[in-house]
Length: 124
Figure 1 (cartoon, helix red, strand yellow):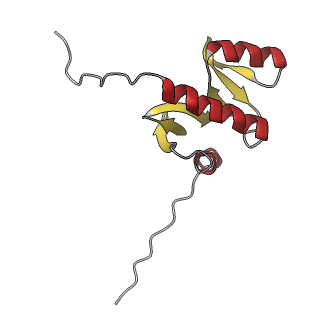
Figure 2: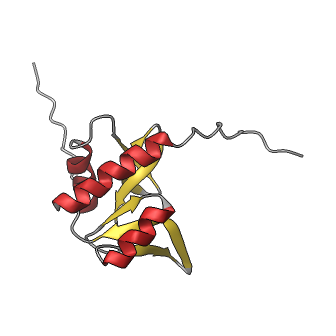
Figure 3: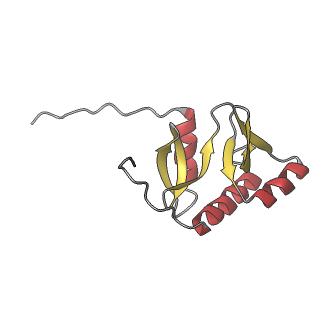
């Protein structure tokens, strides 16, 4: 019987980071959203590796973001000209303080109400 060899798909460093992190958070899943490997809960993104740095982008309540910005441990995420109110970038993704933020993000996003499914039909 011939053995069929399947080439292993090589993951980008960002995807590898996401795959490593998702194992640390039971209940989290790995999904490809925004063209990137993302950590999701209930199909909602709560963290993903930054495209522009080695950091990790994390979703937190706006009030927590303000407190973290004042501490200087994170920077606010800017996409184009838009500053994202609930998203921060932590530059050391595997640091214990960052992992605490990711846990907080997981809990925060899990507590958000589910969005109704988007309609596939166009309205006239």
